[in-house]
Length: 443
Image (tube, rainbow, N blue to C red; front, side, top):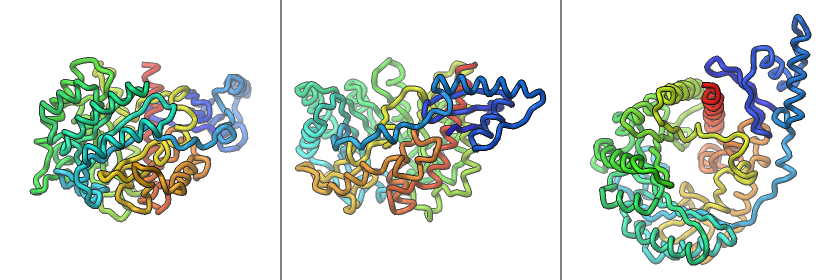
């Protein structure tokens, strides 16, 4: 299987099994497109030109970068249960009332703040459950995790000491709406090398449409000041940690390239924009009828991205940072995030779930910090890889890893049937990422 597509006047051919990406001329594109469909080689006058193309294709096949067989199914076997990353729900409450929130506006059905001893027990669980894995991670999430900043700070200190004792490397990430990201909190996160994801949706009217205070007032003005101060401090001093602006787009702002430009022009130059996770009947959910508009917008975003870089603006867009020939190991390529077996969420009360988006849904409760008791749920997530889904015939399978389990469940009631909307968005985003990669190599 190869995938042939055209963006920005470039004809590109991508081989998913090898990661090979090829920029080709019109004739080669016609020949490869026909071969990819299982058709005959098109005729041409003079025929010698087709013969030359076929010879080049054969050479690339011999080099293993075109029409490579997918041996992943034979090589892959589900790994053992060994969590190496925990998402700590340190605050199952929030100081915003975001209308599109998948977690009951951040409350996850209640739960309050995680106690320090529960958080420490979670770190101990991670150190033990990760076994021989050397690199482990703790993510602070909510709700709004900075509502429980003392516990966040205590866990960072405790986790660093625990990792040192165990001979492991530990990293920390916090996702915050920035309302409580004052200088004290910001300075601590920077000093400790904590990765920070800042939730800003883009332009003020886009952000304020959904991300509102309990009073009903929009939160942009308050959040943006803190987010920009932290990002500027982070960017001004080379660090091993990362900092990203993470926006959510809905069907009400399918011109999200404008949100990307707004953030970059404001100096927030590392951006991720994600489609909202929502049940299809929600008025803001992206629908199949929106896919054509979203596809056009991703291409516009790719052109904006390249324009910035050509003007030597150091912008980053999370989903355009690809390494087709290298990158993750086979397990990550076919399972995606690893939810349910190498990534778990810990609720404020210590109960375990496959990821933060399932917290509070008792059908997905795995157990608690004393141990996993619902092995059948773990097994379901271990089996929810690309070779057990319709994804096995999709050219994009090794980048999405089968897609978001929560998005699939929200759309279809099963983690084994990806959302067709999420799939359509993912495929177009990947095409644009591959186009950006090809353009940057030739610019």
